[in-house]
Amino acid sequence: MRRPAPLPVTPDEQPSDEQPARRGRRSRDESPDAVVTPLAASDAHGRIGAADSGALDAEEPPLTQRDVWRAARARRKALKSEIRRFTQRSRRRRMIWLGTFGALFLLIGGTALAAYSPLFAVEKVTVIGATTLDPAQVEAALADQVGTPLAMVDAGDVKEALIAFPLIETYALEAKPPHGLTVRIVERTPVGVLVSDVGYTLVDAAGVALATTDAQPAGQPLLEIEGGTESAAFESAGLVVRSLPADLRAQLTRVEASSTDDVTLILGDKTVVWGSSEESAEKAFVLTRLVAANPDAETFDVSTPDVGIAG
Image (cartoon, rainbow, N blue to C red; front, side, top):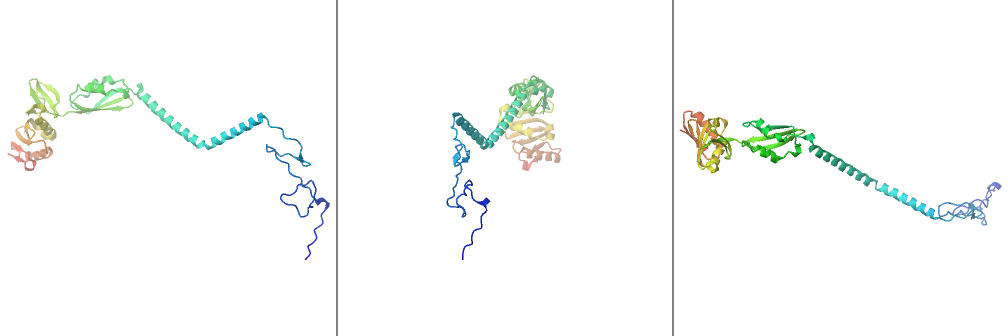
């Protein structure tokens, strides 16, 4: 089969020498002798020069020292911008930590300055827990603490002032901002009185002398202990007296002890053989029941609480 003849070409469509050649291949209709004009080459600055009859219109100007400095400055600026972009998260985290530590420092510092300033000075001392003692006397003894900042109250000075009150067994200081100081005291519990040449000395279970008077204090039993306050018999007798319920304690008039296992209580006209301080709670319960069941009995033995005896 014969190949069909090509269509006729109009004069306007005739290829011109000034039209750029197609990339990579020539058209089938182009003549092998057609001239291809190359594109102008780009210079070192990326600018493309215009081609005029296959040559550059003008030569590129030479690079100067200023151009080199300008290019280096632009490169450093771009590098700094990239560094800031990549370190933005770490810089933000650092600013958050610095802000947090700064706020904590200001808070702690401000609180410390305020605590040691006259803004939090003691204006009133309150005593809690005093029953036998007069609270006003204790407050007067601590009057020198008024005007002292709460954070600067000296526990040593407070202790020195409270030593004058033997009835105080323990105490605790509580700051009540902005101007209050509370002293919670625990009084010693007296167990009886010892008779001596100087009079009647009120003592607690530890043998601490609380007060000395010419007459026997009301409601306090006489203590007849062999060996005095430093003996084991006194320690046992003190524990027994402190374990008595209020109704039996009110009837107690005398306590006798020759050893740790030989404590005897005198309740008015009744004699109670108590024995040691062990199982004192059970012995007190048994004694209460025996007295209620035998109101006329004068002697009770609860040294062995399982077999209490009334006679």
